Length: 339
Image (cartoon, rainbow, N blue to C red; front, side):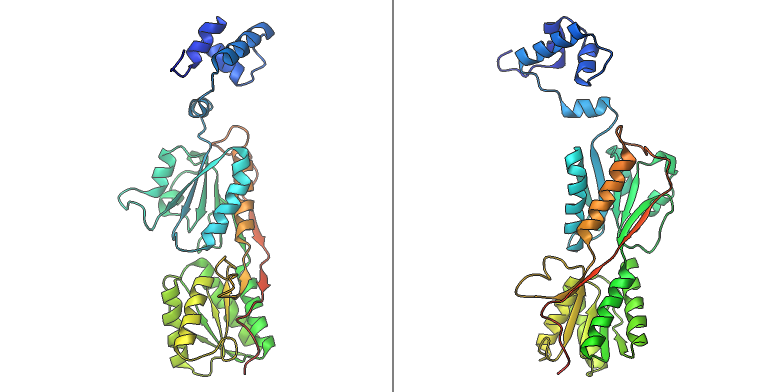
């Protein structure tokens, strides 16, 4: 056997049994007699045989792979989401296959690609694609939607932070500091719209005026910069800005510097997501922690339970779950009382 990796057939020949019986031993089947089991185990030890994980998964009709669909690799929110997913699924032997639909081959539907890979489960960090919604739920692996989305399918579990409450926390913080003319820069999508609406309602309830930039596109640094410049031109009296996420908030900080506004003396800035960018010493951004790691961890746990011991299909007849986690305000150096 020198120079050649032993196979399951070599084990069967050495033990004097069939390949099927070796497979049963490897699976821990109670149907194998003690003498046969001992012979197979001795042959495995003598030959130094290591079972093929891929073959074992195929035999068990599972791939130990979970597909993750996102729509923007540049959004730092996904970093902690994936970390949380891995923390829940990695110890159970699952691998993550992450696809950004914004950069994927447009000729190939990402849902079809995942299903062709025979993933045991799906996590959606985006609105459910129409190709998924159109499918019979019985033909799908377990699906969990992570984050607030514009549409919700009752067939799927969902986990998100309370975006409306997070935006209200930001509004209360700024008003309590003494700000009365507040600006906000928003992005499109389910979470962005929820945050925008809740911030406006809460700030108005507390007696503040809200100036809303017209931007509704991507949530990028450049978008935050342009939207903030629009706010400053629309109302020079704006003393605080709430941004849809931390990346846009950094763009607001850049616009403040270019327009000669000191932060936080002349302008307070609040972001959302509490990404690694917000906590850097250079930025020190006041933000709302949307607990993205916890969202990923809970989504992974729900999916793991759905896949069950056999994987690949829902192991529970329970109704779909929707978990909403409470956000937290993290105060750093970009907010203060108006000068």
